Image 1 (cartoon, one colour):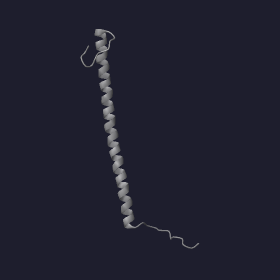
Image 2 (spheres, one colour; image 1 turned 180 degrees about the horizontal axis):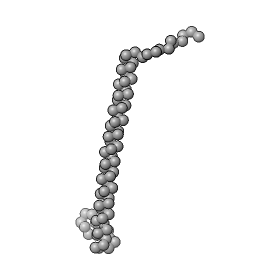
Image 3 (tube, helix red, strand yellow; image 1 turned 90 degrees about the vertical axis):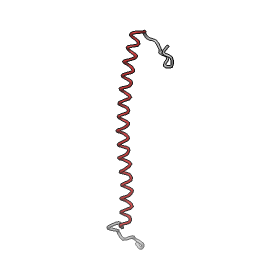
Image 4 (cartoon, helix red, strand yellow; image 1 turned 180 degrees about the vertical axis):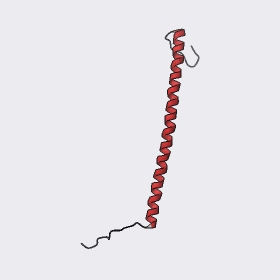
Length: 76
């Protein structure tokens, strides 16, 4: 059983710094992703509100004109 490495009890300062830097980068990216997810949810909520508002307008137009298609370019 020659050439066995002795069990290290502590990493070097340089190795520790390297690992800490990598973990810090990962943590920062995870925080950024969390922020983006919050922004995404806010936009999704606004989209839902806009869709509901459009449905209200569509119902109003349908009551006035019946079930028709409206050309979005010229209103015909």
